[in-house]
Length: 340
Ligand code: FE
Image 1 (cartoon, helix red, strand yellow):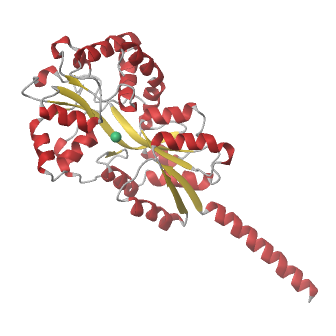
Image 2 (cartoon, helix red, strand yellow; image 1 turned 45 degrees about the horizontal axis):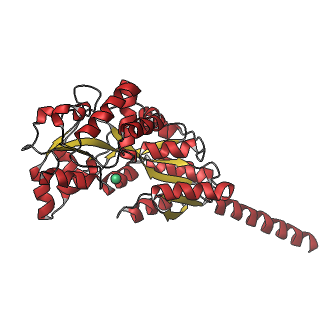
Image 3 (spheres, protein in one colour; image 1 turned 90 degrees about the vertical axis):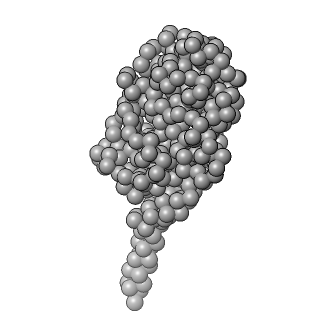
């Protein structure tokens, strides 16, 4: 009798230990700066697939990074989802990411869209939008052309210190070197129609209204206006023209939504599974459709009306990690040029 009792209690112990291990592996804490209508399906499908429950904390990009730093070694965060290479680079610089290895990710995500510590799961392009009554299309086919004195008083952008513009500046540094980008930034500032203000959509609207002749904006903002059923948005789209910049040269600058596993992640196994899930066809479609972006995995189709209408383009394939690495330099250049 006594022997049986001991065996039973050992079994019970083993059982609870296995249970505890399983519980640790069956949870995942995601800090996300992204929020989409399709989130329930996106995270629900991962749980269905793996049995791993996802706890989500959503906040603004910079707040999440701050929070992870403050939590330090006690942070429950396993995965950080954010946008723009410059922010991912900052997270990297602060040392919050842990390197991960996955044959599946290496196979599915193009090499220029990942680093050792993070991967892009969707892309967006930085495009040019112009008002055909104020500038000619042939004047604004490249980022470089926006610094041309012929466009004096015509150029609008959001703040030069915004990550979107810093990443563009960083890509230009990769192509032309710092000195040329500094004269470019000086030229942009000299060409302003007004001091930078508002977001990318505000620049597009100002181009439509004729306040600006030409502006830079992320593609999804334009796609959102195209897909909008509001008459005022349709009017904006009709009043402006859209350019894929640098088609004859370096290709259009693209940026990313991306994710990485955190150094102090308590559930590293689940974290890698989740990063792999981000590269699955299903998750690729959720993310791309959620914000009118493009999947990074070759051959995944989304059926977004606006993106289909805009068609395909030659993208700049400079490794996104290299672009991210030049962001600090771009910031210094823009500061000197007074591009704020
Ligand atoms: Fe945005």
